[in-house]
Image (cartoon, rainbow, N blue to C red; front, side):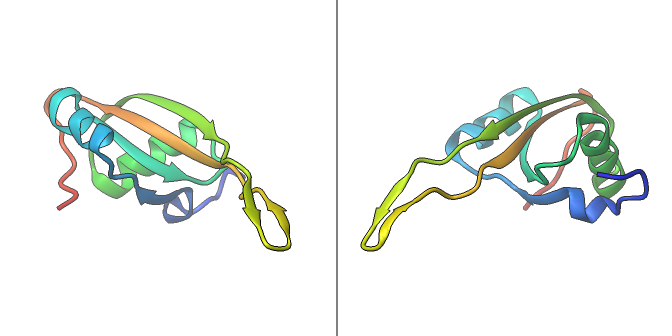
Length: 96
């Protein structure tokens, strides 16, 4: 992504699952689906700008999807990038 990227385009949506909800409540870690081309500094800047919190650490992973068999052949969805963001001990994001 380039230097003048809008922060809203970096963060696609928060990821809510049982595991991510536990991490939110116990470890102050929040999970997001982000743009595949976004780097860790861009993700950190976007989270800090959108939610007004202090980010300490960003971990990213590229999540590859399983192939799905359909009636016309095999389909493989494109991979998505997931970011796990650790916040400062005093900060929290109110998602709900």
